[in-house]
Length: 218
Image (cartoon, rainbow, N blue to C red):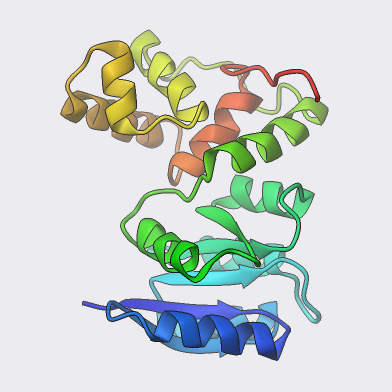
């Protein structure tokens, strides 16, 4: 089955360009385009896309507000925020609200298609170095935003710490000398116990709970 994508951006050229690039992929179907957040909310309900590429700054309703509304409903689509700047407080807020990651607008066609596939498969688009830098930057200014960890086991806390470092399940398995399936079970348990949507929210949570401490600014 094709991955159904909705593209949301107030610039028609951006929508057309992304639409053409993704439409050329055999496993991706661009089902709609919207020019602002209000249109995105309406089209998300009508078209039921699997993935929404959402611009951050738009007229009428911004991308963060739209993402929050869309992600608040059951069986919501995955939302990837589009931004020109990699350090953007709107994007950080979107990750906290449940967005599955973010993508820079100047990403290559291959990166764009890969991003859609990654989030459609249920994973988070972390782009580790950039996303961790973004999360660290804002975690510094918002310490202790969540209660200390009491709902997960010490082993799960270890796994959460490694998720926040950007490690894959395979890398976590190697680090902790565990079977990859065991790591998958731990990850699933962490998300369930902490009521997190995916790994992107887990990264934010780990910093805000103090499981990972932001490094010094460079």
